[in-house]
Length: 476
Image (tube, rainbow, N blue to C red; front, side):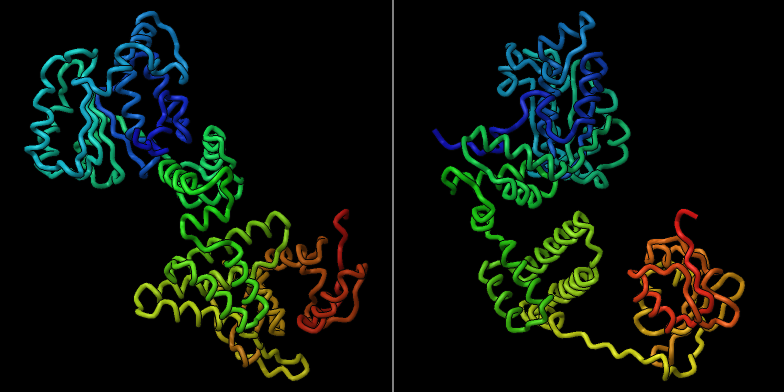
């Protein structure tokens, strides 16, 4: 017997097996139990999220003897009971002449649709309801759409339509307005990974958690894609599927190769960068795929920093920004490999910043600066001023103005409230601008200074030139 693909074996048989679409399962379960099903459904969502499977389950449910008996007796069914998959109707529906499946992608002309629907006005031969499942309905021609419009608007008795599409915007509003729309969501990565672990257990193969997460991420919300990737890895593995197996089987850059590149850039070692990127190129993937994998890996590292409460994101953010620019250049270039190499080389070069000394400050060059623009990114602006040795030039109307020296030629402004918020976070204690700044803007003394705060406050003395610096404890 021919091997059956894993995604076909794993298709849901009952409503409860629709993974990641609980909102649709709950709504349809209530509608089936109360016999309030529409004659036309439009199923919308990304590939592999369960649209066609749901249409098939609904077609079964409309003809299932258990469901019909429950509707007649007013019994409420659960998602585990719909459909029963035991009655004659459920067992024969795949070969029933009353259940018609139609692919609009390859049969999109008006003649194809007319031939398909020519039996719609005839009574069902075996079933309670005649069902028509039309996949990729947005591919139908304009004439074909018009040929089914009247049929959906005024359907014959005991006929139901299920229209599936991945592009709702291409479905005419005349069709949408006549159907109940079911929106299928992208399935969360965690949900996919957990389901893959269960499938692997049934297959009696060990699937490592990291490998399951990697497959789930590649699937991008599509359960069918995830099952296909797992099937490929399962076919080429022994009794265990590791992260290395997934990378090797699917032709991916390993996390270790990506970490090697990132580590080399951080250490500012061009020789190591060249070696690391060559290792990545050996995977055979395109430069753009490697660059996108780098961004994904940097994203993972940033989330790891969040869990460890590590606030040093500047290097990671800079890497992501530069690699994104490189991807844009690579897409329109004949030398994408070289662009990626040179971008990483540039990122690995030591960054030298010349900072003017406070004793030799030139008269600041005053340039008007939009306060709304600077307030968008206040901490970054203040950090820049601290790093570049700015001088407080004016404090009036609750606006604190920082004029940077001629070397930088810019003026920054912020409100008292925002500067207080920033300084309080920096010092981890409550502080007010009024308590630290007087009209002469000279620093002279500090009150209640903790040892851990001294380095920051001493730097503030040089930069802000503030008098009567006072820290108010949080308890006060």
